[in-house]
Amino acid sequence: MAALAPLPPLPPQFKSIQHHLRTAQEHDKRDPVVAYYCRLYAMQTGMKIDSKTPDCRKFLSKLMDQLEALKKQLGDNEAITQEIVGSAHLENYALKMFLYADNEDRAGRFHKNMIKSFYTASLLIDVITVFGELTDENVKHRKYARWKATYIHNCLKNGETPQAGPVGIEEDNDVEENEDAGATSLPTQPPQPSSSAYDPSSMPSSSFTGIQIPPGAHAPANTPAEVPHSTGDIRLTPEDFARAQKYCKYAGSALQYEDVSTAVQNLQKALKLLTTGRE
Image (cartoon, rainbow, N blue to C red; front, side, top):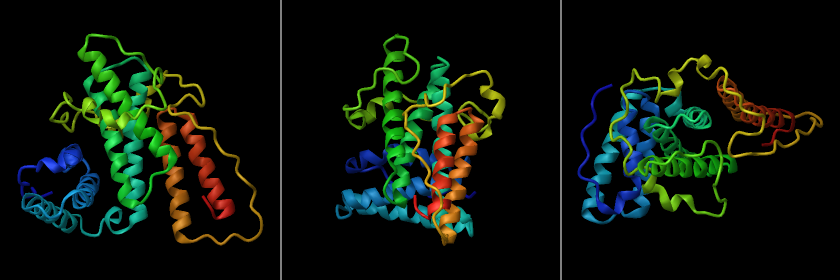
């Protein structure tokens, strides 16, 4: 992957996208598809914030150059050319990162990499909005991950021992207002690619053997919906099959990390789609 031309200094107006751009840089070699969509999110958000001020226009122009260069380098990668594949890739990556951090948290292993994984998962869920509105499940995961990153970071900074698992979160709190608190002292450089601690996709499934997560305990908790039986001849589109495949893929990832609740939810979504033609 050829190096991209550097960006100008970030205008103050674009402070809200600085962590998404940093995540893009961290993934240029690790996962160029993730890096591409992080920049696309930053571009779309930046355009909404300020596309007229000279500094902002210059920055967005250079960011557009990076996007075009990445698109050329990735060529005919299906995750770039097909929206449904790109969405599945990004959601699956964010879920793996969330599950890694959540399992570390539940096991009482508090460290900078797990804080960074929680926070990065929340940023990647932001990025999923380039494909449309987030599901309720993604909104809950983003809020929980951002709250956890902030909470554990502050505990460690103050010399306190964090409480493991989903303890103490107030549903009415606007966690996103504390976004910077969760990232202020996170490592500015990611661990080396060889470090499996930060890259859940490279970790063997046996890593979490012995960690018992009760069914339904995975945060945030959701009650799986009942799946109606098929009524009549359902005509499924190629997009329906791709979505069902995506849910099965998520279920597989969840089982790899012994997360029964998330696996069941995604399998039920796939079944509902295949039996009714609707999500």
